[in-house]
Image (cartoon, rainbow, N blue to C red; front, side, top):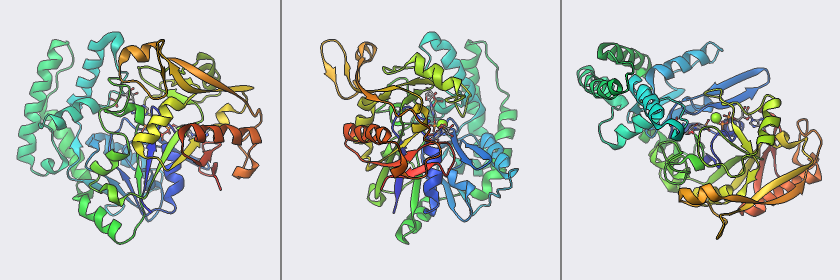
Length: 423
Ligand code: GDP
Ligand code: IMO
Ligand code: MG
């Protein structure tokens, strides 16, 4: 069974936890897009891991983990991440982690260009993670990027990096920002590359062989549908196709290899970074932050929080072809007396049941809410779906009904064990 796990909101839906849960019955875990802008949290008993570029399957023994061609890799960042995980006693051998030779490289100057662009945008800034994701993907599309395979040829890599650093410096100088020394950049990138070299390979035939021999493949989506470069709240999005299709183009496995798509969403909505957020609610944000919840796993920024938005989820289920929902963080709503679910947007002259494309409609969108009673009890120690309060089940059923997709998994806490399977 080959499954894509995809985020249905603005990222941080709990994909890492669901991937980790499903890894037990998978053989190969694949990241196919994004970079270290992602932060996937996995909690196993007393241990907490936050993974940025490494697939979450790295925490399990005897699983193959692949960073596919669609990912952008900061070599030094990946080396640091590997070392951090290895200090926790998890060995990362070349058999356990395969890195595509076609994956593009994020250079130190991409990060600085990302920051410069944000500064120039002022109050219109995207609120990026400043990991250089946009500039690295821009170079890829502009056909001037550097791929992992290019780093094998030191002479070519040196010339390419020197050229790119000179171009970046010209832009950075205009903003009075730090100018890079090409020699230092080359040294940093090539030193990290040597550490990664044993892992770098043509991952495409390896993935095809795994598929053809009946192994189970699990795609670990990063970011979420509303951050997708095509389907998200453009321009307040990331720079890759975060939706299910991105798993195919970012790995070289075709759509015919896919058996199911699990869409992950929270029982409410969160967003970190700028852009429209019709159901954002200061009261819910303050409440969840007060519980120490909803701080970004990559940047530590507080996430904006709001009510469940099924306008977004309905669209996300469409474009991803979601076959089952994984609803996480249900326990976050345990204390609430009444809950709101947004079913449509009122934009003044029209009612939208799908997200609009134009910015002015987003600016005018007023959520149309349906109110449901809260369950007002602790769900964190519930160990089976049947044990959930009837009102929780009603909330989840209504969510599934409004999206046209059944709920398959429910999260009632951050631990690996706090995942319930819907019968
Ligand atoms: P990802 O980027 O989609 O993998 O999600 P993140 O790890 O960035 O953010 C999800 C947050 O919710 C993390 O702190 C998780 O530990 C936590 N989490 C995931 N599922 C649940 C759940 O069902 N309940 C609670 N309380 N926390 C959860
Ligand atoms: P995971 O995989 C939440 C957001 C940033 C910003 C926008 C663009 O953990 O769900 P970028 O650095 O990609 O150019 O930033 O996208 N963003 C995320 N938000 N979760 C993520 O990943 C994100 N990755 C990027 O906050 O709004
Ligand atoms: Mg995250």
